[in-house]
Length: 96
Image 1 (cartoon, rainbow, N blue to C red):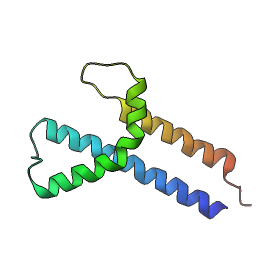
Image 2 (cartoon, helix red, strand yellow):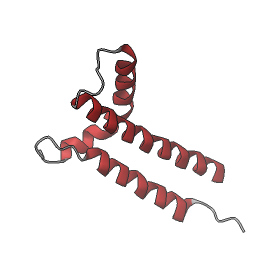
Image 3 (tube, rainbow, N blue to C red):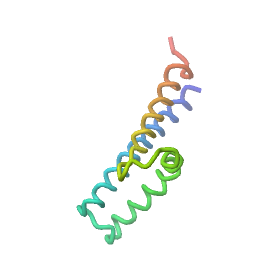
């Protein structure tokens, strides 16, 4: 059971990194630092969008329009941290 919970915690950690990478790439595209006409950049953009958008879309639907500021990644990261704390504090068996 502990091994399964460790894998879940690792997957949640990896997902947080993907969310941060998606946010940074969206800023780089918005400020024209990288160009989406590049095949490599477009492939990374499509991958990160496909991985993070299903979790971010429901949060964006709930949040009010903040005028171009998207705080849904921050809220999703906070939710993931909350889930990690729940798993670590209440579900993970303590080894003596």
